[in-house]
Length: 67
Image (cartoon, rainbow, N blue to C red; front, side, top):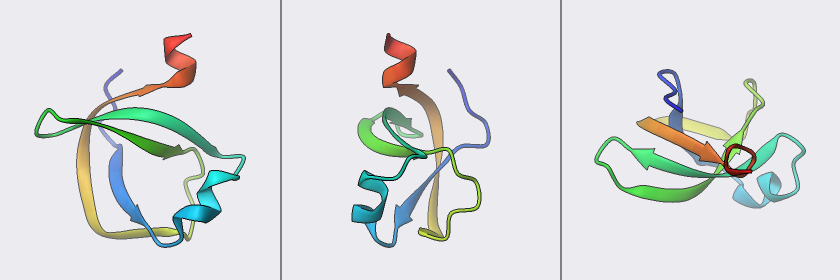
């Protein structure tokens, strides 16, 4: 599933996201073709994000998509 507006950002406090109800695990294909396991956040106004290092995402496959 292509997401034109999805970005990979650094989390300021990653441990906060592990129990967050808006977080999902996802395999993310980066712009260079590499695939990494990351946390996908559905909360668009989270203040735990550091936008200074945002990178473009080619594809996101969540655990829900695989089922």
